[in-house]
Length: 201
Image 1 (tube, rainbow, N blue to C red):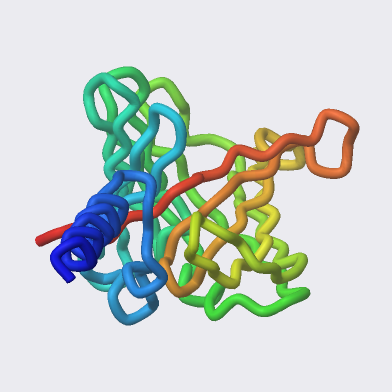
Image 2 (cartoon, rainbow, N blue to C red):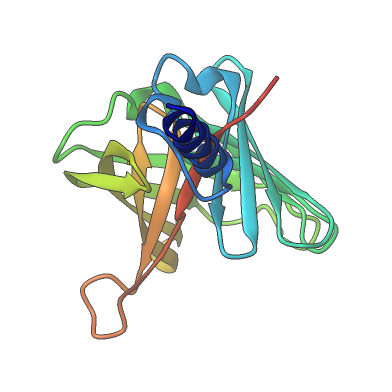
């Protein structure tokens, strides 16, 4: 009987230790549409990003790469409005109503006109973001699964393409969980988060 109690205590201690390991996420710890507003963290390799509701539809994302933190403010976590860091701070002023982009629907296309607010960028020419919602799929972060929209975002200055990539965007989390570059080519590659953690307040 004493031996059985000892084995039970050892098993309980092992289980508790496993639950506390950094790499372990239980399904009931997965942030949801209801709890994501309290904040959560996405991680990959040496990068960690904290997501918090800032005000209204604005999400504040604090990125840490091992140096000074970088603050990003994004409309519903998808459309980047400003990026604040020591190297290349930048921001935009949207000329289009960003509310028209949401809710996302398969096949939807939107064009957002904007003015770049950068010290070294003259405010000339017509800048646009073109959004194309190309599909929906499931995305896994450890034991957590989320439905994500694939949203192709093309940045143009006039008719010249400046940037082009696809976001795998979770409407529940209001966060881009992965980015696909060179999509549809032999050089296609994906940069994605690997882990998720709820933030403790």
